[in-house]
Image (cartoon, rainbow, N blue to C red; front, side, top):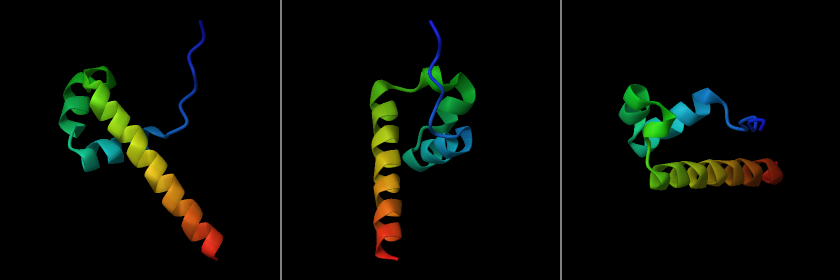
Length: 60
């Protein structure tokens, strides 16, 4: 089975982890160490950031 290619850059994921407060877990245990809730919150925040960027872009 092939793995999906990630859409979010590693840098962006680390920024989100820092913002959401679980960067230390990622740093010490890797992405597999975060909870499902943390992963869901990371996706929600990424979507929110993308929607805000699109809104700003459409206002120009």
